[in-house]
Image 1: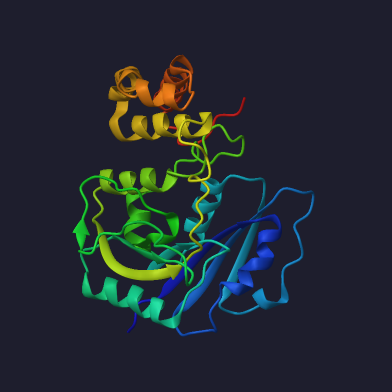
Image 2: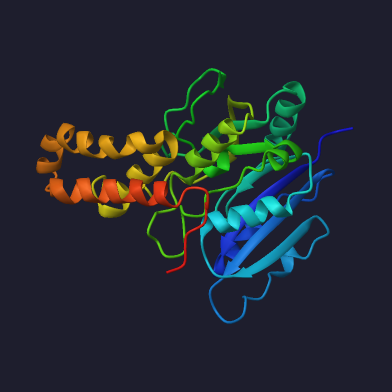
Length: 280
């Protein structure tokens, strides 16, 4: 019997109107699980195209992409789940690759794939051309990640909700690397396969943020703390001096850089064990 697949779509507010463009025609064993956040008093009306037997939508008031991802994980009820967004596209062949990969690699718990871009656009990133089994978390996009639902659930892996929180202290990007890190820490097998699984426009929200802008510096410090623990604090100081010429060239105050990186690392270390953005 073929393995069943959930596509876990996270969207917010009027993004729900883009979701019908993501769906494929109904196929045996493939279901769509949509986590829809809304920020107004009432949610937008559901598009009629989502009223299908293979589509389930659950709605939550509020925002926070990692919270939405965790809600989607809770909705998963198939053998395999693939993270998704409201601006991607799939082909039936993508689903065949996804299913075939997990069937052929029974020891793989988490699979990472390639993203193809629109015609005429450059590659999404410089993807490796060989299969890799990771021991340390790579930089990845959420829509590259698929996992065995039962094993991920048994391991208790979740997105760290301090990243991508509704207050914007830590930007959403890089929460994927932290998620993969937690999978590895939980003993799950994470393997990259050099095959395309999804189409996504080339643009990236994190790339639009200047490298030394406060939000990006905070993110760097926070991720460093999640991956390397207390070592991230002296690294904030050492990294400031190592990057001094670049900071000056980019007109970034070195003291501000060190403070932003250090404070974000300290915040993660002081609140570790919660994995939720504290209130207040």
